[in-house]
Image 1 (cartoon, rainbow, N blue to C red):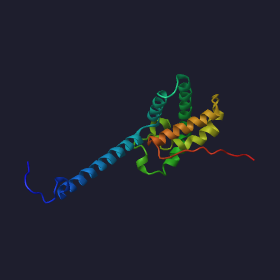
Image 2: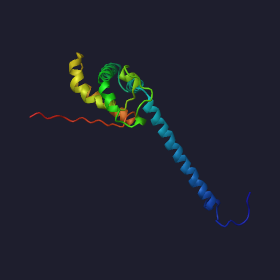
Image 3: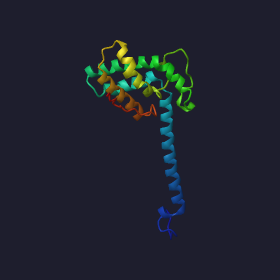
Image 4: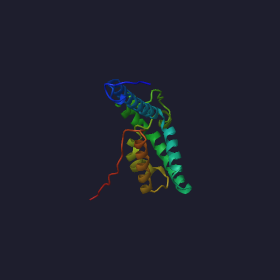
Length: 173
């Protein structure tokens, strides 16, 4: 053990200790930021179907079985809509930074099998206004709006997309 007089009084005031403490804290923050970035990058590489599975698992833990069936129907309809609307999304995707895109995208496959969820919110309006009314499914439009908002909020909150969606009520005169 060290005995004698210390110029700095206590070792926690020694410049080397202070420098080391700053360096350790800085590395912790960098590692934390790197871990978070790695998680975001992993999420950006997941395909829509994987993400929809995560969403369904999330919902299944929070709602009763009857309502879960409605959510499952909604997700399946939304997925089908994305596969139809995906052609337009792929055209728009060419304008996005490469980091947001999957590297192994294949043409002529279903959108949800080959793409991440970055542009999923972009299909929301098409789903509510065009797809759902013409789909032949008897699904309440208000419930579809609510579930669309919930899904897109969940995607944004969990960093599967950078896009946040809001509902704007149209006023007819």
